[in-house]
Amino acid sequence: MLSLTNVSKRFGGHDAVRAVNVQFQPGVIYGLLGKNGAGKTSVLSMIGNRTLPDSGTILLDGVSVVDDAPAQRRMFLSNEAWPYPLYSTLSGIFSLVAYYYGDFDRELAGRMLRSFGIGPADRFGRLSEGKRQAVKAILALCTPTDYVMCDEPTKGLDATGRETLYRYILEAYDRRERTIILSTHAIAEVEGIIEHAVVLDGGTVLESFDLSNLVNQGVTLTAERGVMDSYLDKTHPRVMSRQSLGNLSIVAVHGTVRGDLPAGIVSRPLDLQSYVIQLTSGGNL
Image 1 (spheres, rainbow, N blue to C red):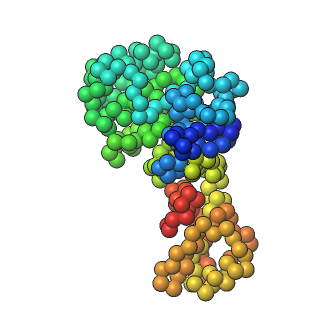
Image 2: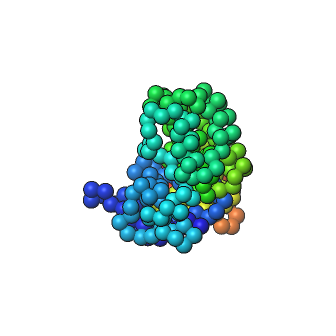
Image 3: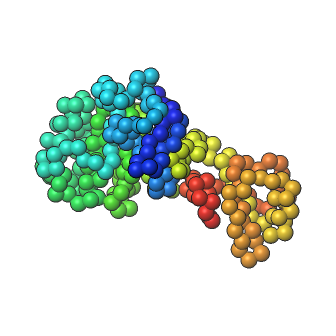
C-alpha cells in the first residue's frame, strides 16, 4: 500500500500541498481529480521522488520512498519531465528502462507504437507533442512496476488517440495488475476506467471514494421555485450550488436525499464530472 500522511509542500511561499492524507491500495485504478493548481502534479512529483515534501511521510508498504532505490523501482511516474536522452532511439530508451526496472513488455510497447504511428527507431526529440505523450504512456504501461502514475496522460492527443490510450491502459492492467493513478482534467473520459476517485482542491484532499458509491455522493433536484424553496427550508440539505431557469430551480445537493421527495421534485444522481465541478467550485451544472 502507498500511503501519504500529513504531506505538505510550499513553492515560493505558496502552499501547493497542505496536509494531504490518502492511501492508494494495491491493484486499483485511481483518478486524481481537481482544478488547475489543486496540487495533483505536486502530489505525484513527491510520490515519484522528483520533489521532496517539506513535511509528512510517503510510505510504500511501510518504507519511505525518499531516496530508497528498491521502493522507487516499484513505481513509475510519467509527467512533463523527460529524464532520458532526447535523441536516443525509442528502442534504446526501452533498453535503458528495462535495465533499471526489469522485464519491459516489448510486445505491448511494439503494438502501442504502431497504433500511434511511431517507429522504434524514431527519436523522442523529433516527435510531435502528441506522439511524445504517447511514448511517455508506453513507458509507464510497459514497465513492470507495482505503481504507475500518469500526470495528464492524454495531453496533446486527439480524440482517437485518447480513446486508443484508454484502451491500452485497461489492457496493460489486465496483463499485469497494478495500481494506476491517472491525474487528469478529462474527468468524463475516465469515469468508465477508474475505480476510485481522489478529489483535490487548494492542495488538500476533499474526498476519496469508490466510483461504485458515486450515486451516494450527490444529486440534482429540479422543481418549481416555490416547491424547491419550501423543501429546502424544511430539510436543510448541504447545497453545493443553485441556479434558476425560468420558474424552475435546479439545486445540486451533497450526499443522498433522505426520505421521499415531495411531489413536483425530480432527483437525478450527478455524474463524476458534474460532481467534481460542484464539489470544487460550486459552479453551475
